[in-house]
Length: 366
Image (cartoon, rainbow, N blue to C red; front, side, top):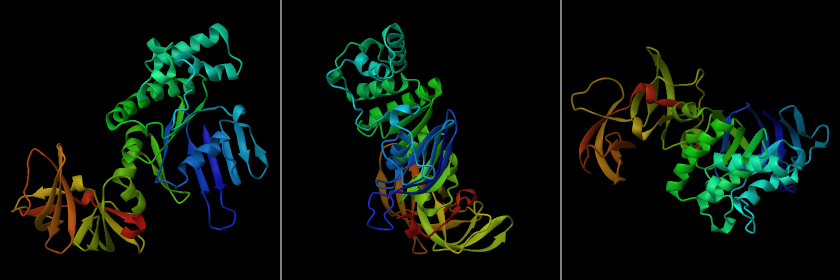
């Protein structure tokens, strides 16, 4: 449904290295929920706006379905109105002087659909987002969550093949954001439209997406399913950005029975998750929730000892900072079903299948 090749966009032409987007290439399948994830200034919104036609790239090609909407080589730029897209903005862009129904009807009128056909599509879109009973309500009288639903209804009423969403949940409070994640994913599955979603929130990206592209400094650093990006990332940056992580510089030694032996600040560690050809710049990733508290008499690989230096209680979960005998420290997460106190001596086990070797040093993730 969407193909991007060699996309380049500069805003500051006085500097040769000032790229907003640099050599971005990606494919999005029909019916896929695809997310561009990254920190502020990484180029994700610029990429989305180039697809929408709100920004004109400097180089590359963008294809939506069978249509080339931008080609730097051919000098082709398809106007926004002719692109088979709809867009939901961060600010919702709701017309305050219109009712809910009038807001949703507006894009239909813009393409010449009026009368009974328009009213039927407006009613269907409002029912789909749970606002059928609010069609005559003035837009200023809606809550933030309701305005977000109006923006979604206005986007889907057109029946576009590609729906672009630029951080549409960022203005909602935490509880409403969580609720709207569920509703948004359910809506996408029901309508079957291809969604391209922009966010800086890694939990949002993991919860919503079929695939995620992690961006940094105008480039796509890594791309994959939420499961792969979280459990088996390939780069230090993606490992740190997608979830909590402790990264430790390591060097790879010889394999041990199908496992890779690593030299780390923790001591020797065996890993079952490593690149086919590990390079010279490597880090060991261990998620805090994957580290296990071991019994005193436990035996086996990847056992380390230390004392709990700090605890952070957040209700369901408790995070411990464990100062190890080796001089290093690790964060460990457990449930509040069993609480441990600061100063307690503990032994930790790092399961080899959860010890992931990634390309890059810990400072590369900053």
